[in-house]
Image (tube, rainbow, N blue to C red):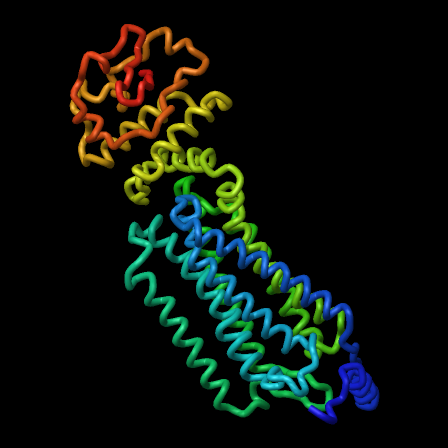
Length: 416
């Protein structure tokens, strides 16, 4: 638009006006640009990681982290970041849509940003509390009604803010090209944030000793500690220097720390399963499933053995060679559980000797003394057990004295 001042001219004009008003003002510059660029790149990487998690949502260690909800957390954090760019004074507002302080400073930053993100985190913590302390499912009205109620209250809060005078909430101060929050409005925001995150911390403490497969005590401690450190810092900055956006150090520190806390929390929850899914998928799945079985949660969590048994069994065999703490017993118990999960009842005694290690069957001494007793067990994909049971015994497939059976179709041997 003709007649628009250049950014450098505008910044010089702001600085001169601040000097006339006897106010401190640091002009926007490279520090603001670098902070915005770095945070934007980090969030871009985060969204790629969240997309990878959703793409692998059927991978059990990722599925138990609620990847769709965690992606929602990231989207809300990105909206919060867009609002911070405006309200923390990182960019010029004149002649841009950002001049609308209520649209970006209230709806984008507060309602759909930090409040929605905090509500999703609280809903996830409450869901785990319902499952492992109240014995109720991670679904249903009992889980979503509190979340829906908080969401409606937040939207109503935004509508009230939109209706009242900007002087009571947030106002655009044209002379210095900046948005300023009123003291009362700022207090209401911090009160809600402190309340929500205190609830998250309490719920995380209550589920600190749940079953090991789902235990997030360490992750929750790291995430909550990061959030509370930043809450304390941000509260001190906002009340110690209400016009902090005019100080380049304070505005950059506030923005960077806010979104550093979000990333610390998000990656403390999602980092381990994402890394292992990408670089040691089968082995980590085996370790995770072994914990799940030890906790007695396989059926409750509804992990499909048809999808994971073959990979898990092979991985357990490989782990057994390198980790003396894993013996043959979890593997035998795991295969037995798979049979029960598929058919809904235990196998009849004496049947399926090759695929289910029954408690009364013992290994031959030659196998028990073998340093690699499971060698050759899973050379081929395991067929469904009811198909294996239906296969009639033939002379070609009869067990050999050495403890193996040859499949006449594949010409492969299966050891037991």
